[in-house]
Every structure is written in structure tokens, then in C-alpha cells.
Image 1 (cartoon, helix red, strand yellow):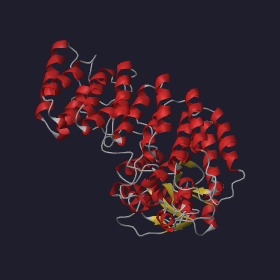
Image 2: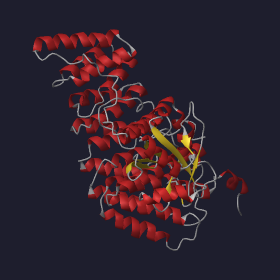
Image 3: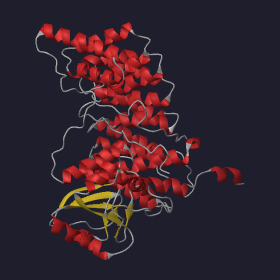
Image 4: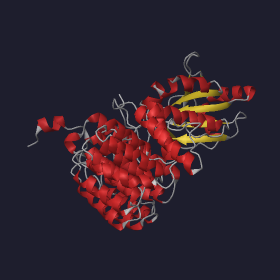
Length: 501
């Protein structure tokens, strides 16, 4: 007999499955340009043909923002498009920069003239939402096109759109401003002057606070020579070992790609009593990326024993970055990804495995994990492993072994051949993009990332914890607001704190 109370509490499987495959954001209809007033908002043009004519007259680049409130199969608003409309496009910096463009907002309902102009420029088939297309002033060439949106709706999103706009205008991309840097931060070259400079800067760390202290730590990190600056910072920390705030500031400041002298002292802090210090130490080791055997051993012990799954995830991610050439690390991550007690606890090992680029053994192991998870077998499959299935597919695409494409098409897509359910076409579309990403298709990889980010966001909003799908923000307090040069960790996706509502 059916348990009606249990069925009532269960989130509809239709919604669960569709979120995985439809957060790709596809529509098949034509498009229309909306118009909004000028002032503190972007001045949207009424239609694309008119916008192109105006652009040619004024010699301005056209920015086309494709944005659908709803996408196929979903009854709720598409979160990425909503975040762009309600936050990013209203940011004063974006509005100010938009004055250098002719701006068009395209939605699914209306004129074939808009779609005809895009088709003439090579944009054909289904139109992905959201995306941004920049067209030259003559209207005969696409300067830049960015499909999907994985930047959330906060500061990171605003900076991402501003960077696209600058690129379309031909402005050379400049390094993001580093609050830890200083115009007068270079250490002297002579030994005596250098020793004096280190002592003076360490004193600034001790006496300062907030941005001033962080800037001093940053100067020491970027001027380290053979570990001399790192050693000075940890000597200071040893003298003030009870000051958790100082420990966090130093650990975060030393989280820089390739800063090997900092790896072992930072790894020692994985045993710190304060979770804030332990979590930041794990993330900093991911940034440093040091393959030292003692660092790997410390990370393995930390990730295995840490009770908080969020902190353990940071440890497994760092282990993947630091040990991406180690067979034992690969085996451990595969084991943990398969045996994790919850879907959330599997995130760290899965993201850690994504650092094993081109590793055939890692690819075969992830394929076995996907085969064990299996394909949904019926219309009423429940909520279990839905997020994990998508995340592990992303891991396989990130590794990028071409042989995996055959596995995806034969074992996964082929397994749906006789399944009669409303979500089958969408899931096949998602896995076809996964297969293409395994073959090196960058556009397909962007689509896979957008799909998984959207679905993890959905699981957070729908509170699927009863199915083991607990979700916390992947960009938590340990990962946010870091400045560390060019390196960007894989899987750093910012979810809306309000669940996209």
C-alpha cells in the first residue's frame, strides 16, 4: 500500500530530474528585444535590427544579452538568468559601462527579425539562455560570445561581465587588483637590506590589522626567497599561537600557487583546534599545490578524520591538486567518492579527482563509479544520487579522456534506450555534452558545468537533505575573497545564498 504521507513529503521526481538536465537553459523559439527606460538602468533597445543600425551610425559595439525567465520544462524561474536581470544588470558599474554599447535584451517570445539577424551571424538552432553576444559596430561579425553563466549573482558575477565587456571593446585584460600587493612592496636585493625589510614588514603584520596586516603578509608572500619570509611569519605566529585571527590571516596570505616553502608549515596547522584555521589551511594547500609526501600524508589524515564534511571536502580537494600525479591519492579519492555517507560528502573527492587531467586510470575509476550509480530506471526513481550522478559526470568530463566518450554514449545513454519517462531526452542531452567534453569540446564542458552548478543550486533551494543531498555553498568562508595570482581552483562555483529565490 502506498504511504501517502511519505509521498507528500517527497519532492516531485519530475522536478528533481529536470533540474539536472534543463538548467542547461535551452529554448527553441524565436526571440524578442525588451525595452527599458534610461537612467540608473541599462538602456535596452527595442529590437536587434534597429540596434544594429544604431550601432553602425554611432560606431558602438552591440551587447546582446540573451535572457529567458523560464526554460523548457521548468515552472520556476531560471536562477542564473534571474540573477543577471535582478542583480548584475542593475549594478552601477555595469550600467555605467553599458553606455559604451548598444544593448539588446532578447527573450523567447516574439519577432523573427531578431533571430534572423543572429542566424546571419552564424547563431543557429536552439538558443541558450543565459548568454552574451558582442557584435562589432558594422554588424557583420561576432567579437565575443559567452554561453551559459556560472558566476552566480554577486561581486564575482559583476567582475565577470565587466571583463567580457572590456574584451569586446578591445581593452587589454589587466590583472585583477590585488589588495595584498603594494606599490612599494619589493624587498631590497642586498642581504642586509633584505633582512631589515623582512623584520620591518613582520612588525607591520604584528602591529597592523585588517587590510594593512593582509597587505604586509602579501608583500612577504610575494617576496619570499627560499622560505625566509615564510619562516619569519611562522616565527611570529609561534610567538602569538593563541591568536586565531592572526593564524587565519597568515594561512590565507600564504595560499599562493607554487609557494612551496609554505606548504609544510601550513600543513601542520591542519591539526589546529580552531576549525577556521584548519579549513583555511586545507584551502591554502590547494592553492599552493605542493606534491611533498609529508604534505600529502597530512592532508590524507586530515580529510579522513575531519568530522565536518565541508572541511573534509576542502581536504580532499587539496589532496587532488597536490597529489594529481600519485596513484595512492587517485585510489583514495575514488574510494571516498564511492563510499561517502552523503552526496555532499562526495563533493570533495569528486572535485579532487577533476585535477587528474588526462589520467586514464582516473577516468576508468570514475566510469566504474558512474556505472555503480547507474541510470534512473523509472518515472518514480526517487531523489537518491541525482546530484551525485551529475557531479560525477562533470568529474569525468573534467578529466577529459577521449575514451570516456564511448562509455558515456554506450553505457549511460544506451542504458536509457528502453526507459519511457518524460526526463529521458533531457538527460541524454546532458550526457551527450559530457561525451563531447571528454573529447575536448570546450563549449560542451561549459554546458556541463552550467548544468551541474544549476542543479546543485536547486538541491540547496529544495532542501533535499533527506536524500543525502545536503548542499552548502561551495564558495564558503574558507574560499571566498582570496587573492592568489592566476590560479583558480576547479569547482569554485558560487551559489546564491537565498537559494536563487
